[in-house]
Length: 246
Ligand SMILES: NC(=O)c1ccc[n+]([C@@H]2O[C@H](COP(=O)([O-])OP(=O)(O)OC[C@H]3O[C@@H](n4cnc5c(N)ncnc54)[C@H](OP(=O)(O)O)[C@@H]3O)[C@@H](O)[C@H]2O)c1
Image (cartoon, rainbow, N blue to C red; front, side):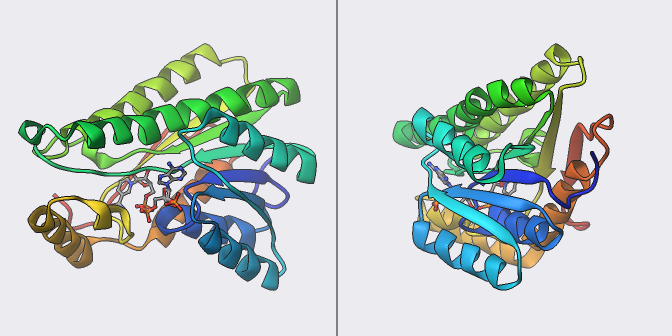
């Protein structure tokens, strides 16, 4: 199977930014999308927009820190569309600050969403992928894990934990059933840094994102590229950043 038309794709963190853009892109190209996030009002609007254009979309309130929510998301895809071809584990948070700030609650939150959230998705979808004989894990990680800079220690650590996890899963799954793709975006114009605690730090990153950031549609197209390959072709890593980003 290749192409996007007819693929069943579940996406976490679909209520804004890269997740919402990916849902829109994939649905426009014929995929059925099953969307999860906590802000259900945003998901409802997105599902309505996709359906208005003739696309297929379902939604569910999902908090990726809760194991059961990922099981429910996968089940929704299977119940509604008969199978799940791809899980895009995209939900993520960035609470950037120097390590010396000792923001332990923020560290816990990033580990819970960015690492445990991805593990919960793998745990929910892997048995389904194995029973189907095919399946694809796509994760949104970050260039923060490639170019290490101050104030992003824990965030970058969570992203590199997922990079490691996906590579190990790939090596454990060379029987042709699973595909794994790690997408590392640089600055993308989204709401990601709107929740950084320190106002000075927040304003600095927001300004940099506004000056430099690329559209989330660019990442959506990269994700579509990985998904649309034939089953025997795995796009392992994609790095996608603004041309001017150092
Ligand atoms: N923007 C960038 O420059 C950039 C660069 C590299 C990597 N990334 C990564 O790209 C991914 C998407 O982020 P974005 O830039 O599109 O930012 P965004 O607009 O803030 O989107 C983040 C998404 O994650 C969801 N989310 C957060 N916590 C969640 C939870 N506990 N359970 C379920 N969903 C949760 C949010 O939905 P709800 O709040 O509705 O739950 C939202 O849909 C993240 O993994 C981020 O780390 C972004």
